[in-house]
Length: 207
Ligand SMILES: Cc1cc2nc3c(=O)[nH]c(=O)nc-3n(C[C@H](O)[C@H](O)[C@H](O)COP(=O)(O)O)c2cc1C
Image (cartoon, rainbow, N blue to C red; front, side, top):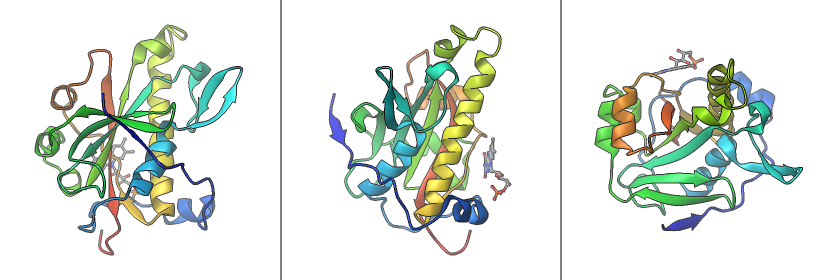
């Protein structure tokens, strides 16, 4: 499997968290410029990046019930959507902060259709797909596991939204899609269910 190491994420910014919260809105259009590797590094780190170790476990940027970490992040890259990455699908590996190639051909049009042909997905140079392995959390929390997984997807998505705001990237959370079609288009392993699409790209003034 081809692996791409991402540049180290930045842990500082000239935009405060409060500023990012205050100005955050869903932004559904994008400049026609490819995203940079630094952009990709920063938004994926915000989903599930490793921040520190505790008792030998790599702890991540978003909280997780019992540190079960059911959320898996993928990156879909549109044709000419990235400065360095070919169009296709990549799986984010928190350990080592790297990408593994999942699909080497573009799935952009199919993913757009699976997302009910929403322009925000069609026009985005790149889209993060958050998927979940429910069993990781259900095993430990039989009664509340599913709820916890959804909460965790929300934590990861908000991290992405605020990092985008901080970096002048546009993004909009997308929950309206066909689960079966997204899983099919991305050829997700059976244990992973898609939960959230986070298209992103460089800022345009009109949204
Ligand atoms: C769970 C969830 C699913 C959403 N799905 C979509 C979607 O499929 N398409 C879309 O354009 N916006 C979607 N949104 C964005 C909302 O429309 C948006 O957050 C809302 O209008 C409030 O606007 P704001 O985000 O600019 O504050 C979704 C938001 C959430 C939280």
